[in-house]
Structure formats: C-alpha cells, structure tokens
Image (tube, rainbow over all chains, first blue to last red):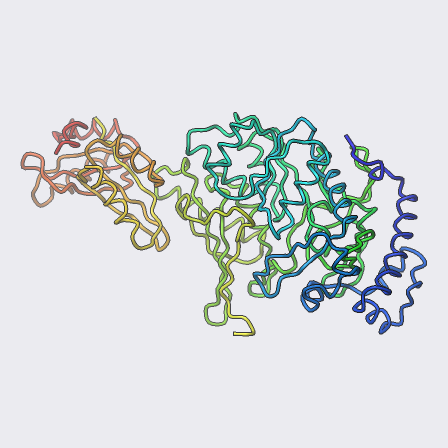
Amino acid sequence: MIWDRMETLPRDDMERLQLDRLQSVVRRVCRKVPFYRNRLQEMGFKPTGVKSLSDLPKLPFTEKDDLRDNYPYGLFAVPLEKMVRIHASSGTTGRPTVVGYTRKDLGTWSELVARVVVQAGVKPRDVVQICFSYGLFTGGFGLHYGLERVGATVVPASAGNTPRQLRLMQDFHTTALVGTPTYALYIAEMARENGLDPTRLGLRLGLFGSEPWSEGLRQELQTAWGFAATDNYGMSELIGPGVSGECRLQDGLHISEDHFLPEIIDPETGETLPPGVQGELVITTLTKEGLPLLRYRTRDLTALDYTPCPCGRTTVRMRRVFGRTDDMLIIRGVNVFPSQVEEILMDTAGVGPHYQIIVDRKGYLDEMEVRVELAADYFTGAFRDLETLERNIKERLRSTLNTTPKVKLVEYRSLERTEGKAKRVIDRRPTADD
Amino acid sequence: MWVKQISVFLENKSGRLAAVARLLADNGFNIRALSIADTSDFGILRLIVNDPARAYQVLKDAGFTVSETEVLAVEVPDRPGGLAGVLDLLHDTGINIEYLYAFVSKSGGNALVLLKVEALERAVEVLGANGIQVQDYHIVHQI
C-alpha cells in the first residue's frame, strides 16, 4: 500500500513542485532568518536567484556547527510563540542542537512518518511497540504520531526495562517492533535466556533506525525474530524520523522528495556528485516552517538511485547509510568505516553480533583492535578452533580494510548492551586539543 | 570409559578465573584436576570435577562459555620413565595427543594423567593391550 499519491508523482511534476517550493523557502529564509540573509548577501545571491533546480549548488551549505553556534533558537524562522514543540539532540559532544516545530510542521511530520511505516508494511490492525526513548530525542514521538495517523495501535513502551518489554509483547500481542537494531538484538537475547523463542511471539515487522546497520545485521534480526526488518532514516535537524524509509523490497530508502530535496556531494570538496556515486547526503527542507534549512550537510554517506522501484513509488531511493563522515576512522592513513567491520563479522560463523572497535596510538602508530564476542554454541573447547577463528577474521578484515587490525575474542555478554544507539568505536588517540 | 572434561572460555582479564572457582565452590563442586592454556588475549580452562553435567549447567547459567569434552584418564607408573613409556606407545601407533595434564591425587600407587586424543577408542585399546590402566568415568569423578 502507498500512503500518499505524492509518492508516485511523475518526475517532471515532482521537479516542478520542488522548484516551486525551493524558490519559496529561499525567499522565506532571506526574510525571516538573519543567519541566511547575511550569508546569501555575502555571496551576492538574490532571494529570487533560484531559476531552476540546477541553481541549487549555488546556495550555501548549512552545517551542524551553524545550529550549535545559533543555540538555541537563532535559526528559527518563526517567533517562539508559533512553535508548539521543541526537540534536541543529546549534545554528548558539545552543545546540543535544538529544533522547533510549528503546528503545521507536526502535521507534516506525522504524514511523513505515516508514509514510512505504511511502506514498511504496517497496517491499522498492527499493535506496534515503540522501544525508542520518548523525550528530547525525536525517535519516540516521531514514530508515535505517524503510527497513530495510520491507525495502528501504539504501545509507547519507550526504551529500557527489557523484561517489561517482553511481558508487554506477550500480553498485548505486539505484532511490530520499533527501535534501534542493537536493542532489538538484545531483547531477542534476553527472551531466549528466559526460555522464550522470539520467533514464536507473533511479531511480523521490525522498523529500525537511528543508527547505521549492515545487511548482515538485518539478516541476523530477521532470523532471530522471524519478522521482516526494514530501515528508515531521519535526523532531528531535518524533522526526525520520516525523511526516508524502505519499502518491503528492502532495496533502498524512498526519500519524501516533495519535502526534502536531496543531493550527494564530495565531503572533501563540496562538489555535487552524479546519481549512483557515493558521497555525503545533503538535504534542503522544502516545507519546514519552524526550522527551514538550506543544503544541510547530514554527514551520512550514501548514494542516490533515480530508477523507478517495482513497488510503484517514483521517489528517489538512497542506499542504506554506509557510515558517517565523522564515524570514519583514519588508521595509519587508511580510511576505515565501522560498517565494513560489521559486515565481515556478521558474515563469520562463530562470533556474535556484538563488537567494539578500539583505536589507540602506540608511539606514533595507530593501532586498531576489534573485539567480538565468541558465540556460546561455537566453543568446542579446542584451542586450535579459536586461533583459526581469530586468524580468519583478521585475514578478512585485512583484505577488506587494507590495514591489519588486532582481533580479540571476548566472552559472550562481556560487551556493553545498549537500549539506544550502540557505542561501537572507542577512540583513545589523543586529539589536537589534548 | 571416557572422562567428562569441562572447558571454559575465559578472557585474559583479572578476576575471571577466580569467578569460576568461586562459582564452583559456592555450588559445592570439588575440582579434581585443572589446566589452563592461554594466549595473551584469552585462555581455556579445563576442569575435571565431580558431577560434570551439573557443573556444565551451573557455569552456563552464570553466563560462561562452556563446552564438554571427552578425555582419557590414564594410570601412569609413578617412577622415572612412567609417562615416557605411555607416550611412546601412543606415538608408535600414530595417535596424536592434543594436550595432557596431571591429576592431583594418585590412583593406587600410580599417577594419573588426563589425555586428549582424537582416537579415544583406539588409544584405550593400545594402552590396555600393554597393561596400562585407563580409569573409569565413575572412579575418576569420585577420586
């Protein structure tokens, strides 16, 4: 099922609509947001300077730091009294970024999340347990109102208290789960430890987001739960969840292009890249009232695919996020993404889905250590088997990453389990500030 | 005929070995023999205890990564050359020993060693034919 006919708009119509909306958002930010007015003036760009979509690269980028520098309300395009909701990022690294929603923005948000959940397969008869935390983080509330819009029965369980999550699933006959992939894995693990078979709990759908995950982890989740697992994407700066999501074909995430105009750029040079080439996703919000953003640099790495999807939607698809530009590790001059490590570990029998990458500096040299849990049922008691396993993982990592990490098998359950976003990388190298 | 050995996967970090010993003590197990093989990262603790089936479950329930392996308990004459003789026998018949460790207590005036080999039955046969006693499961776990 397709929620909104805008998802099937012919390309010409879509581009006309996008141009119309882009022109209006540029005029509006010039009028309402001093930050953009000054920036466009400095560049000599007139508020009416957008003549076609190909003018987009002439507009300035917006960076996360611009939001931080204008903390808390500096980039808002409406007076605070017009805002009906505030959300914020966690701010674990520096100042949080604050976002505001007008009443109309909240309506748009629900509609966009409705598209995402419907294409993931949610029906009004579904009982959906939301294991995202509710609060300043956009995940919980975002999915909540979108699911209500569709008519599903929402169980706002929030994150944490895993035994209660399992009890709710059984008592309320939950049919769909919303959360981070790593937390869903953990719930399945806890279920098995308590003698429950997760595949017999009756869940048919899992909707995952808020952290990058690999195809291998999807397979792992689908096997563990016996449900179809789809990816969806968003970030609070843009609106929260609802920017894009996978349809049942699990082949790329459909972007709601009538609201978010995507580009892919080279993160180093800022140049726009052609469709199909991987680079950093940049998004211009076309309809946001409260916090419109021009060419927001998401730091997420992906590629765009404009070929029509067999599901009937015509909207452009972004590939599953490969990693974040700020997740990228440079180990002895070689670029390494945690997602590459994850893909290999998921594909190796004998090690569990939980892993951690530790980076340190010994003298002048970077050292990378991959810690992964030995699967409980793989342990034979033979030393040789463990050594072979370590050596195989090391060899596969070396040939993919072009750098040789240390591999360390650790005990089952010894790595931290999280209810929110998983902490996969611990970088102990001194930074320039130290 | 075989003796049940419990193997525990342990990370090389302080307190893990003590945790196993404490857990077994609290559950009333007596450790009859043990060995540790380790690299700088991890180790495998091998244990002979009374009631191995229950020990396996107790360790597993506590979250340890465990497995059960069958090994041979071989009586070795307690005198110079006792062990060498037994090993020669196995070597001559092409039976490979993966690892070996000794029992604390004696069995009749003989020392007792635990042997891990691939060809369990063949080893028992060879040793028996040469008058070397292989101890029974029940006896070893009760020693």
